[in-house]
Length: 368
Ligand SMILES: *Cc1c(COP(=O)(O)O)cnc(C)c1O
Image (spheres, rainbow, N blue to C red):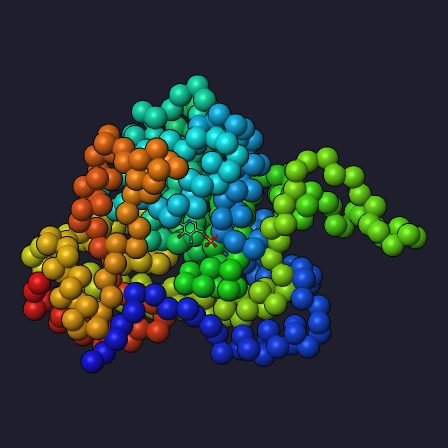
């Protein structure tokens, strides 16, 4: 029987040599390969001022700090995400306020954002669920009206575009993840993009203890000369991770196009299947297709029917509001509650072949 997992970890064939060279050099920490990785991220993805970090969560946390979120402030985000999105708000003793999503695609609903704004609201986090960009124009209009910072959690969305613009070149802050099962992995890793150059400089300092590395020369005594003025973090990426990231950037555009082909095949094949409602696709944006999801009737039967044929189907994440730390399930998130009941995702990744899609389509079409 075929076994088709829902995710894979993509490691480019050139990665072993790349990483080996770093190990041989014994220069493991942040150095020229991190810089090179950032330059390539910027040129290959068209993203602004990318700074490589040790995780996507670090990127989100740094964005919250740089956005000026203080204890007691409120940050509006969707519940349809991984817990990291809201945890970073709690790390600053601020309050995550969950806005509802749109049932059709799982992305935050701008109308709901507006309803959640109070005098304490400081920022909005938009999560591009599965790689499909949120309604950024509407979100920016609201942010502009209320003087709020916009942070994009683009963990699923490297390479995605919104009205022709790359995700990573639109909002105050955009955060990417290079965790093992994301599109471009460095083992663990992430990046923060700051639209504002001054902010990017600040991010550079804060990712390394609040020390400006370029302007902290070694003294005669053998220690760097610096003066810490703000709280900094140990959030930088290291060179052997960057070596893996650089290898994995090879052919990234082709991998995205391949994912799109798989999605097109899925959408054609599933369009007329009763019991399935595909997520909405908008013509003005291109998804990075990290996930392929839809709504399904009799979900548990569906999952078990696929499992019996070696195929993993998963919700990936349900609304995170249910966690005690975040205050428990919000009854007012009507679409989120509905989404929790019907959403499902089936395999899409680099290791899949076209006939894997046909195999899955056949299994689904037999019914559940
Ligand atoms: C993976 C992920 C993160 C966290 O990224 P890490 O690199 O694992 O810290 C944040 N948000 C979303 C939506 C994610 O999927």
